[in-house]
Length: 344
Image (cartoon, rainbow, N blue to C red; front, top):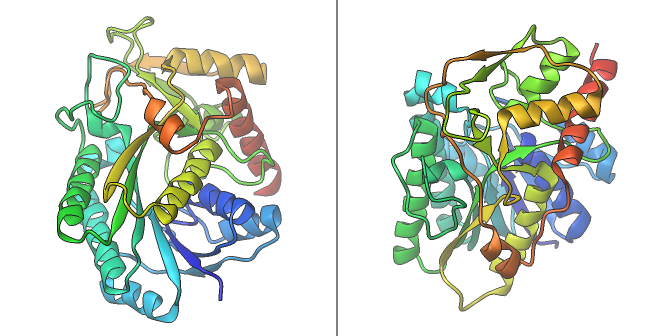
């Protein structure tokens, strides 16, 4: 019997790309759990088209602990669990904090309880660079102290990492890694799968591509009065497939290490800061079309600038990024054009 990896949120943006990386680079059977609150069941068809493998999946809400336990009762020989399933919109979390605290924390606790109950010893947590808050000393590394969370979403990630630290002290057999993503962008190189938000997007690159394709009338740049080189926010953009590949590396590290730390954290970023306006101008150059945007006020919950020091990830995970900013944006545009032609 093959060893299995359970991926929660497997129909989502990062989860689906991680499944592809797992199928193409490991021998594990992959099981997905996703309730499609911000994803589509058709994602599994796209994974099949890319990998030739049909994924077994369960459409359950991880806040339903018993439903999750029922899955674990059915699936034997699970050796690892990768937890992506969480709400992730900063502005939505500001507008509806209950939704984020309820879903992101309760689902994490249920998944961890299931891991302990069914003796799944290797756990990867989808964290975020938002845990650092507003930091003046850049770039940030894994030892940078947390600042005040700027949104309920960021607070749920800080709490999630605190939970894992506490579990490490009490349950030493449960090994965990928290991967602090910076800003995932782009789409699979085939152009067959990418970010497909069910609701109006809040992340920069899908806002750019949806504006360019005509799904959105125009886009708003949230503030150009920050203390940055052009006044707009600065972020560290990283291709979603690079982030997905890091999960394979992190899983291998957990499975092959018996005497390392019980819990660990790694930054996943390119190490380069790119402003909102620079990203817009890069898209305009690649697509060859002007983007309809205007300048608006700052958005509550946004951090001024953040980018990563990824020395630890490169060294300990034996991982490195493969895609440039231009390739990230080009792949996102390719995906948007695919959607236009294939989803009438």
